Image (cartoon, rainbow, N blue to C red; front, side, top):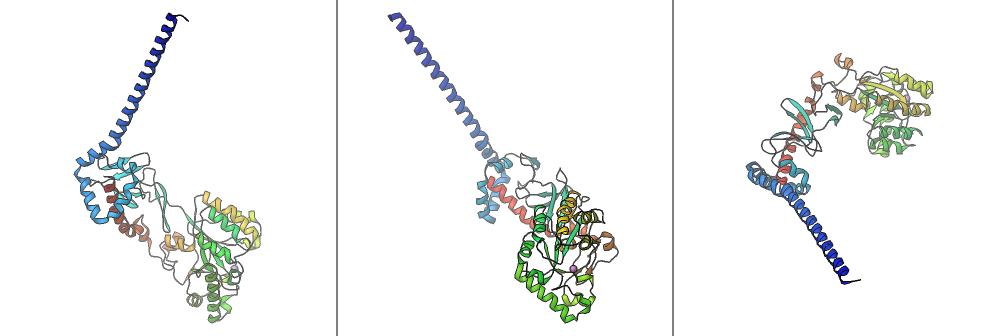
Length: 399
Ligand code: NI
């Protein structure tokens, strides 16, 4: 290799090194620039804006004196809340999680209902408005896609009731109820409860109602009142042993009872508005048809028996079908509460609006109870006051 060639190669190598150095330096400058932009946008700008706004500081002071613990804990929530307070004007705001409302004092609403400009909204624990069905206790409310409460939208309610168990098929029925988040009421015989205690415990766990159907299914009207009392006291004891609670509701065998029996037992007694005759059909698809083609007026009580395999098989199809059709499957106590009825030691057949209006339902508080959110609003207002306090602390920690 002659001298000239070697020199040419050396020059080429030096050019290559210089080019590489320039590329590395360019990348470093670009990275530094990006970091600077992030720091300004995420930290310095929010800081400057909050120092500038007097309200933010007032909220901090108020909060520190009120509830220092809460403010400290919530300060760990970070970036999401920083965005909320950074230079926002009062009123509605929207981010990738949803819509929320900023008050003029910098607070925002959480955990409850609030009327804003004549429209009621429901705020979740993070201050975002909720849509769709919201359940509060026994009642259910519908919020449109813009978050406004829709008082006209109500799901009709049905109470499925199962008598004479528990039995060997009860657990399968409970699987289905649990899967569809549906509730039912079980009118059980004390003598069966002592044989099958486990499903009884499970009923309580999944929100079903514990009912008594006497100890061994006698015609109560042929017994003395003392004997009647013993039938239900013994069953309550068996229920207590199985699930830790007594029956809240009762059903007389054959539906045969009297005012004296209601008073002696001391529980609300339930008849039914639809008798599926499942015990005589003993055919799952026939039972299914009976229910789906029957009178499913809002507030109906449906009688079935979970001791028959065919009845449980039918129920496995009936439950999803009714939910698919828009019904809400509830316990009798839930149904009564939702209809404004304080259950008495009396007899109930249905909770239809027509029966309520006709004065046929004992303990009905009257039509006024249920105008939109008013029934629950009074209870919730206080809770919501707490929510406002919490909202202040949320703002303060972010500031
Ligand atoms: Ni029976």
